[in-house]
Image (cartoon, rainbow, N blue to C red):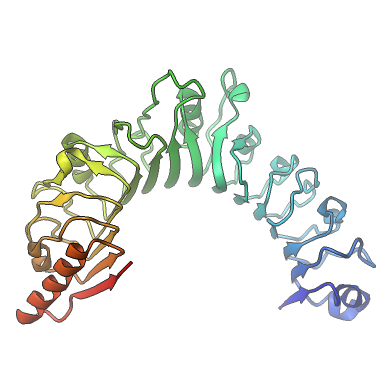
Length: 358
């Protein structure tokens, strides 16, 4: 049972002990209440909301809390080191005592500027999922000469990769299954972009890479063969790189966003993309030279602000059940409608075409 506390009801609520002790999940929306009438918290398992000066909040009484979400507050100096059972933490900044939360598994930071992964992450052996709303880069002064131990992280986003120092942290995270990263140059613009080799991540299933230099030719060196989902943004891909992607044996989802392909043509081979089920192409102008022999397991095709027509041969892929066209050029919308009509004439009533015009 959960209770929502507003400014008008908070004082009354905490004066009613029989009611107050019966709730294990609390959501507090109050910025005007400066203190609480009685210390509370031993019964609380989950706390979400807005607190007036959370650094004054009595977290030491909340020894059984497992979920803590105060993402609307800036509370870096708040002490949470006594929350031994805490498993989920969401906040606007990372409290300095976070590393002493020995059972923490989920860490979500609502940062709006580049955050810094501290050595405390390496000390939290049960931590599995780390997500930052802003980009996160390793704290260089701690890592250049530091020693490293392997983490148990399974998911990490959004992580900046600018040089070998950033790769040190990834090499300490061999069990990653999901990774979202941003490839960026160092602050010195004269230095070239650093292109990481990620094939050592033998458990990685989902990878999203954003190339921060739009207009510069990217260089995709290698990809883990375990990938099931791949998203590339702001890349300029050549035929060799497209072939490498197509030969990923387990790839089921491919999203190319604001990316380009060499010579503005995509010419896949029939032995590529054998497991692909979902394909999304966004903000691109690439000629698709494909037939029904390509993408033998494709189920969904999504085009967003796409500028070239869809070949009618795609409609004959037997597994294709949905084509979605969003804010595309008129010829793209017309080609999608023609595919649907043609398939209906051949008795295919399963193919669904969705068109969202600009």
